[in-house]
Amino acid sequence: MLSARTIYGEIFDNDEAFRLFCSIAASGEAQGGWENGKISTLVPGSQADLAPKIARHGADEDKHGRIFTALLRKRGLEPVAVPPDADYTMRLEAAGIGLAHARLRREEQLTEADIVTYLAHSRVTEQRASEQLRALRTYAGDRADIARAVRVISHDEDNHLAYCHEELLRLAAAGHAPVIRATLRAAALAEIAIYRDVSLAVMAHLGRTLGWPRPKSAVLAAGIRGVYACERLGGWRRMVALRIPARRNALGGPVPARASHA
Ligand SMILES: [Fe+2]
Ligand SMILES: [Fe+2]
Image (cartoon, rainbow, N blue to C red; front, top):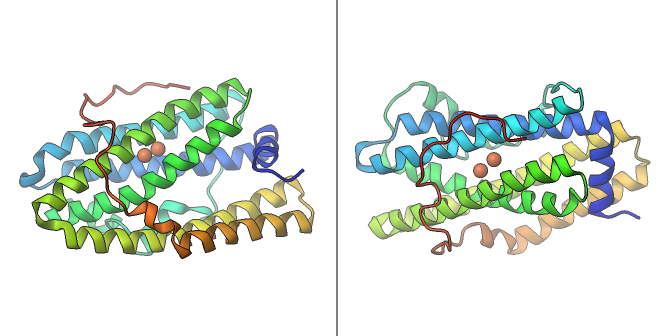
């Protein structure tokens, strides 16, 4: 039977597929860690209270990268290079979503408008991360190592999403509402197309690794395109809504010490 559960099961139970899956995940998390780490050091004075939260955000993403790498090492596997077509964070950056890496490398102080751009980008991508990790929690099943790792990451991604809602609402109340609305819309519409393309690329790579017959790959590709159609028709709006989160000040604690959690 062709279900998400059986597909994930195939990926988790095959060393090569698992290696690619975890390598892609680890690389995306590490990119997020780098971006947030850099941004936290460039926050303008008017937003100084955000700096430790952004640093915490970055530390969490770095931790997630290490967790995925640890899952690989536990199976005696080393990470592989991520195929460019499957690189979600780099494709978003190439599409002009979020702050350009070249800009961050220049080490110039950011503006309030840059902080809005960063938070809007995060609002959209953290929604995706939160949803994906919730799905992984369901599909990890009785694979104890994966289930434990995914539970830790999922909790953090929910915190990141709550933090984005809260900080964007604060900035909206401070007069940035029209820019926030426009930036969120642009980020969401770009993200859903990139997510579709990356999903198709990842499925194609995994399909070759797992030797999927052509009809199976075709059904999965049609499913990915169907998800995009639903998101384009209105699902994207869930990625731009802002509401006061149940969890307040979710990133308000100290930046966690570097440690392996897997
Ligand atoms: Fe993450
Ligand atoms: Fe996150």
